[in-house]
Image (cartoon, rainbow, N blue to C red):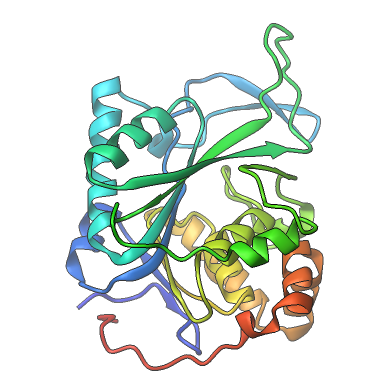
Length: 291
């Protein structure tokens, strides 16, 4: 039996500490949505700018790339495992840059997924390019794909349209990188902003849905899911990041913090005014999860 690293009292936030490749095959539960922020394999001893300071781009051994063939095999293996954990009408979102996103797209297609969109996240506050020999890197890509080419997926079209002032939301999202208040419990080197994950979850899940993140990091996916009434299972290999995840979830047990976070995220504030029923949590006991 798998032992969770951490489980919230309401059982809406579950965290496993270990290797995704070892843990995913050990249970049969199926999820409504998966968000994955896999290694981009960018740790090549280069430098960048962060908060006005020159810093190393190295994130850790988990982000060091191998040959193109090794990277492609890595992506095929984990995407294949995730496919087995998706409901037939489920969708997966995978973030990346040009370093890994083409491999991800090819493997999604080969494994039978239907790619729905490639969202461009245009950062409103990107770090400068210190070499001054290239355009500033200011975007990341997020592929949205459904498990089956023939089974319809969930998409909250009306909400996305209303969040975009009555116009169809495009596949270019202008959102900032993480804010200081999102790092109160510590920072993961590739941490995504809550605003980004909130939009993804609101767009592609209904209330009470189950969301999986196989590379949880500091569990931004889980915090966003819980802020909008969804349930979460994350898998993180590094204990230091699992510790941050637990602290972040315990932080929002304080209703003042919980409310402040929801007010800071514009999509939540708008959704609550437009479609409050999307946040109506009615959790039922789940017997399929083995922990």
